[in-house]
Length: 594
Ligand SMILES: [Ca+2]
Ligand SMILES: [Ca+2]
Image 1 (spheres, rainbow, N blue to C red):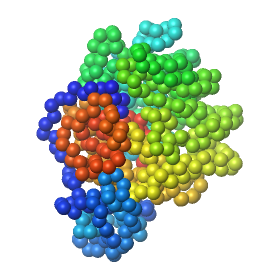
Image 2 (image 1 turned 45 degrees about the vertical axis):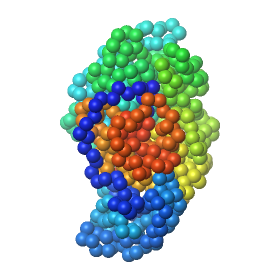
Image 3 (image 1 turned 135 degrees about the horizontal axis):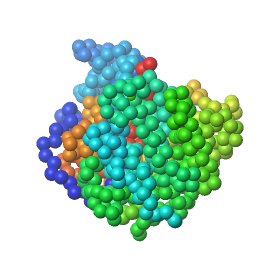
Image 4 (image 1 turned 180 degrees about the vertical axis):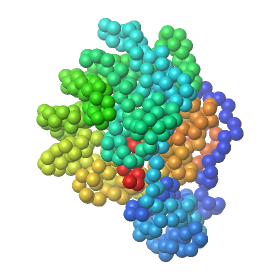
C-alpha cells in the first residue's frame, strides 16, 4: 500500500505455478458460482452468489452431496441486477441446509466449488494470521533467523532540538511489503491482537516462542505477537514528551530488496541507519512533500489503548512489564489530551502518506482502556465525551475517502464503553454503531451485499465492518445487519466476483503472487497475510509505476468498476498488509469453535 512511489524494478518472473482450479467461469457458460471457501457453520446464514458475465436468467438451484444425491430441492434464486463484471447476480440462499457435509451448488448447468458445512470451518483461521505477523517482524526475524534493521534504527529526524540523535527503536513489524514502520498501525494491530486474546483465547495455539521460532513456550502465540508489538511501542515512547511515530520513509521504495539486506539510503549510506520521526504537531516531510499533522492525539490515543490493554492482560503474567505499560499508558494519554489533533505519517520523496483526519476515536479508546485498568471515573467520562465527537467512523456511507483518512476503520472504543458502562451509556454507543452499519447497508443493495467504498485497503473496511456488526449484535441481540455482516466475511473468503479468498493460505484459491519481495524472491507463501483487495478501476488506472507482469487470469472479471489482480506488480490490490491482517484477528477468533 505504501509502495505508491515505487517504480518497480521487477525481477524476471517465470514458472509461476497457477493456483488450483481455474478462475474462469465454466466453459462457455459465462456463469460463476462464488462461495465462502472456508465453508459455513450449520447455524449461519448461507448464501452463494451466481455472477453471469452476460445477461442470463437463473431461476433456481439445487444442492448435491458428495455422492451426487440431491439434498436441497430446487429452490428459487433471488435476482439482484448487475454488479461490477456481473451482468446479473443471483443470491442462492441455502441457510436451511444445516447437516454437516461437503456439497456442490448446481444452477443453470454450472457447479460451484465444494461447499463445506461444519462447526469448525473457521478453526485455526485467526491463529493462521499470526504466521504473517511473525514473517513481518523487524529486529529479530524468525523467517530469516537473522536480524532485520536491528542496528540501523534509528536516527531522530525532524525534531526541533535533538535531530541526529540515535534512539534504539528496532523491533515491531514492517507495515506491508515495504519496510516502513508506523506507530499508529502497529498500535492498532497490537490492540486487535490483545482484544482477540482477551475475548477468544481458545482461538489461538501455543506453537511458537517469544522470538517467533517454532516451539511452545507456555504462552498463547497471539500474546507472544502482541507483546512483540508492545515492546516496540514502548521504545517508540521513550520519554514523556517524546512520542515517536514512524521509522524509515518512502526512500525505502527505491529498491526491491529482502529486508535482511535492505539497501535503502537515507543519507547515511546504503543499508545504513534509518530515520525515526517524532510526532511534532506540525506538518512534516523532510523534502518538498508535507503532511497535514495538527497534533499528537491520534497516535497518543492509540498507544495509550494498547499500553492499558496490555497492562490489564499481562498483570498476572508479568507484573513488572504490566506496571511499566500502565505508567506509559497514563503518560501518553495525558500527552494526547494536551495536544489534540492528528499525527500523520511523514512523506519524503513521494506525495503519499497516511492521511488520518480523526483523533477523538483514538482518545476515546485510550480513555476507556485506562478506565478499565484503573477504575478512575474521569477516564470513563472523557471516553464518553470523545465518543460523541465521532459517533460513526466517517468512511461509513461514503463513496470514497483519502488514504487512511478515518483510521482505525472501526471504533473499538464504543464496544469497550459498552463493556464497562451503565445501561444509558450502553444504549448510546449501540446506537452509534447502528448508524454506521445502516449507512453501509444502505449502499449494499447489490448481489454481494457489499456497501463499502472500494478505496485502497477495501478488505480492511470489510474486516472492520464485520467486526463492528459483530460487536453490535453481541451488545444488543439485534440481528438486523447479519446479512451484511455475513456477506462481508463471505466476500473476504471467496464470495466476490473473482472467487478469491483474500487471506493467503486460507481457502482453495487465494493470492499466489502477492506484491512482496519476500514471497517473490524466496518463493515463500505468506500464509495468513490479508491483501489490500479490489479497488475502483479509476484508482488503479491512475497509480504511479504500476504494471502487471503476468497475464491476468481474472481478466473476465476485471471488466467492471472494481478490479483485483493476483499479480506481483499490483501494489494496490495484491499487497499483504500487517495492520489489515491483525484487524481481522478479533472477528475470526470469535468464529473459532470453542
Ligand atoms: Ca507461544
Ligand atoms: Ca483516528
